[in-house]
Image: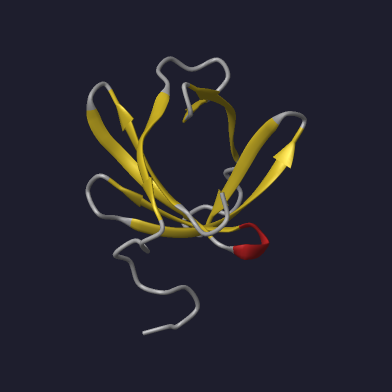
Length: 100
């Protein structure tokens, strides 16, 4: 997914968007506009994320393609995120590692 921004929906509403950078870096923007920088890695068939807001909270998701769209769910939790659309445009978030 490197180079892409995926927008995910849940229950017909935007849940959030994730931009995928080289080397496993990601940027997440939730529906309220909160942006987080993080990293992803594969682990035993799951994709796991660590974000800057809580680097000890590893969030792992199962993923699959459904008619060409990415679906993602946390094992044991209810609800599935579904890719609503994807684009090459960056998220409207501050760039990582720039400071203030």
